[in-house]
Amino acid sequence: MKIEIFEDNQKLCVAAARLFASLIRLKPDATLGLATGSTPIALYQELIRQYNEEDLDFSHLETYNLDEYVGLAPDHPQSYHCFMNEKLFKHVNLDPEYTHLPDGQSENQEEAAVAYELALQSAPLDMLLLGMGVNGHIGFNEPSDSFIASTHIVTLTQSTIEANKRFFNSADEVPRQAITMGMRAIMGARQIVLLASGSNKAESVRRMVEGPITPQLPASVLQLHPHVHLFLDEAAASLL
Ligand code: GLP
Image (cartoon, rainbow, N blue to C red; front, side, top):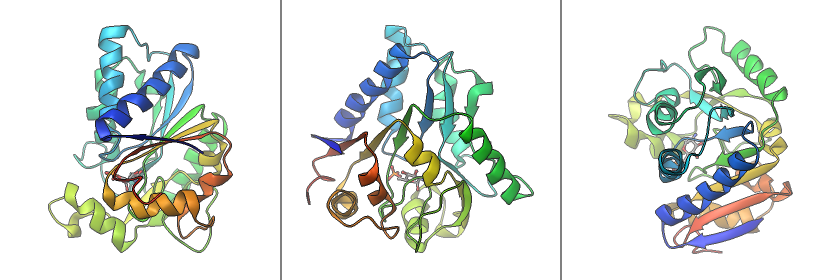
């Protein structure tokens, strides 16, 4: 793992955005994996700035997001469809036909998971952006007894519901299930860029980097990947 430590979230996001921008300039038809959460917002802002001011072209890219809540309509303000529209898609020249998120609204969730998995298998990711949950989840791969390879439906842990309730009116409104990319597509990405900031991530960052590889701390599997860049702020790196 290549670890870089920055003063704050803004600085780490600008540095990580440079990595994405370099890839996009080198390979304009790259396939990217994208993440939601508060941590990468400034990365998306930097990419939008480069689109506006430095001609960064998104028109030939294809993107796949990690996850979506089950049961939220794409126009629900807390859906990840809505997040991606607001934070990136509507500001740049991505082709909407080539931006993909798992379908959290399908009547048959298992079918939706299989469909997303098949799409991912035909489009290996050149670069995948990851955040990390306070409990060490990546995408919505929650701590459990085993790693799950394929896109799947997951029941969110209490700790994730607690962590994500800040985006909803109350914990009761947080969906209990999500559909998430599994470890096969995550580990199959050519390069992985994981961002973590804040002292509440420090213990999971330490376990991801220095602890045993275990599905109880899903991000620890990244120790097995040959090209992982970690962009941390000082608070998240404080226990390393
Ligand atoms: C959610 C998403 C993750 C994300 C995590 C961290 O649970 N499913 O993909 O990494 O939040 O969010 P934040 O960056 O707001 O801490």
